[in-house]
Length: 204
Image (cartoon, rainbow, N blue to C red):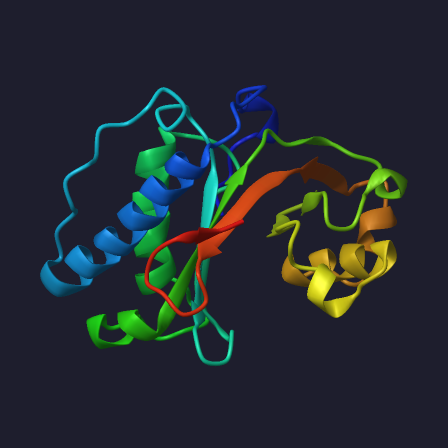
């Protein structure tokens, strides 16, 4: 996660079309195949105006057979065009998630790719957090953490449980989100991924 000011991000984004999502999924997979085999970046496809917008992304890798997380990296603030962010985060999720050993090229067939394209972050009150809609970032002194909107739903977390999980992600005690020194930011995301049993084709 980057350390930029969330308020510095652009204000609005155009929604992604099904074609846009397909292009980004194919780009992410081609990036991983090329980079893990050769250490090189793939050629960039021609980008539509929507894909050329500056937008922050997360790329999540999961095992197809179990759904188990295999890597996830992203950024909280847009710093480059969407297509470039997807390339960079795809590589980071495969090679630079400290929780896991780097992904190998032999694993790629058994890995499912999911992309999250974030909206601008904004300050949010804890009572305004909507499960399934909002992702969250917290800053408290030197600590910071972020959780995507889709994280709490499989666990059926309440709002308070989501906020406490966010604190744990940031290395903070549960309940730290309620302290005056805590800065809480909300955001939304367009989330889609490859079909369960295929290496391409988006599922929203």
